[in-house]
Image (cartoon, rainbow, N blue to C red; front, top):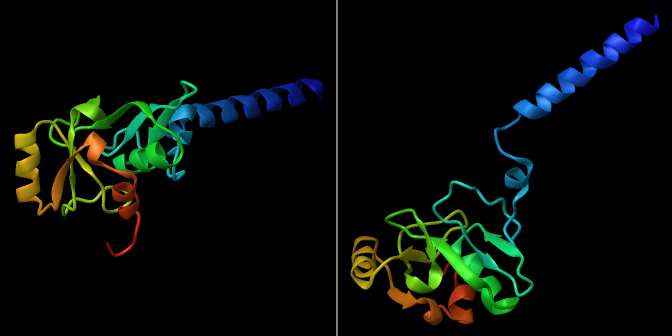
Length: 153
């Protein structure tokens, strides 16, 4: 009887471990990464994700550029901010890019800032996607960031 109990425990343990190992394909950290502003899950493959560091040095993750900017203005500066550049889909320092606002492109949370490398590319995106204006990192003010969270604007 004792031998049967040990065998059942082993089968149960192997089954549980196989289930856990086969789930999803994402590590636990990736599966649980949430935006440091809104709490939405950050998709590690999204072209809208952003990040940086808190004053404490802690890494921050955002599901969209607008969350990065709102966090930067309302909860303390984000150092080493980065975003995914629209055309190349490469991670780039946010301060090196331009941001097109008011386009017909939507991020995971609707209206957003579209990061673009170079003024010429930003002007092209502005024309092709019916944008309102092009801003540098420092021109994305607290009120600009907040406006992106208002419904109907």
